Length: 212
Length: 212
DNA sequence: TGTACATCAGTGAACGCGCGTTCACTGATGTAC
DNA sequence: TGTACATCAGTGAACGCGCGTTCACTGATGTAC
Image (cartoon, rainbow over all chains, first blue to last red; front, side):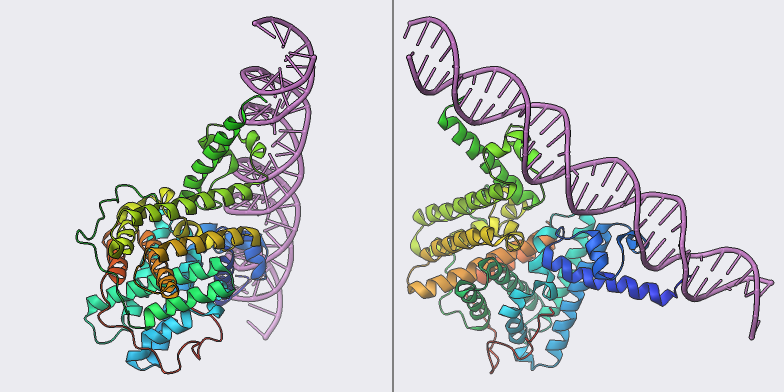
């Protein structure tokens, strides 16, 4: 071989890592193979020595981003007192820094909607990593039964993801800060006045179509 | 003129309406001008008699979708008792029907992340409609001061949007239903155990970069 | 240890294709007389 | 009321261009002897 086995693995990892940043910045279809390879210091022709297709790279890059987030939360939890763990994660997630740097941020608000439209294979991988992320978040919530923690983790992640999407739409002005603050407070402050449920709860009578 | 003034306006509106559905289904870049025109029963050559550019249609289509959602919420609120208004909206939003039919659903979870990456002009329009949507949602929350209602509306919309994004990633199985349920309960049930805030609150010490 | 050969990561030109956009043209209808 | 002309929404071919992918080739290094 021209290069050692390690060399190829390192190159492969470098492509994935760089692509992972750029895809979160530009979207799953927002940057081409040639530019992604250039980012890794290579030319586009070598791409298929590493990946079967562009989609294969998207899957790897996305997986990489999700694993890094999940691992980060695990570490953050490890070095924080149990009752402060979720709050620490929320406070590091709902910041202007995270909002303004999607390339190094959570892949869910950056790529979630797009990946949900990809092939079944891609979606399955994505769903698997999402579940791992939720499990890790649930593990940071002490003092509640496993299932309740999981449910709370799902809702917290949803609020975090939604807040970041809204804040990014709003840009970087006062409106955007207001959104970030609302998300933080909703997750960190006790709810003063919860919304009362309607008598006939779950599937609303109006929900025979979805014209929102 | 070949056709009456009304005829052109009708055609224009038909293109926007159909495109609004297809773009939510396929993404802001997921469908081409030719296909969008075919959907409206026309050929692609006539496109530029109606729009300056593809982006101009995306802006109109998105605006149309947002206005429909906001108007729907206003009507839904009108025909519901004040204390049930937000709950009614949440219950019609967080359903499998909405999850499985993005084309006729809320534009924020479908297009938000993508639009946040578009030109400054597009983002400004989007941000404006988002604020209108939030204001309308806030108007459905009775018995709290204007500013508190606005904050609550932001957090509620964030949770709704995030829940739908997560549920769409998860597909349509049990995991996805679980996510929808967690989002509904978080918004409709009193919070049993709120997350305690860490002493040094807002900007976490760990938040000097955004590696989530 | 030294030499000849095989390997294959990476190069850069080329491919086919679909896209947004342009343009000459059409023909039904509005308008002027 | 009838006729000639002007208008312009819509058609369909064509345009550049960028994209994902393919391919013949290179040349540094691993391997066999």
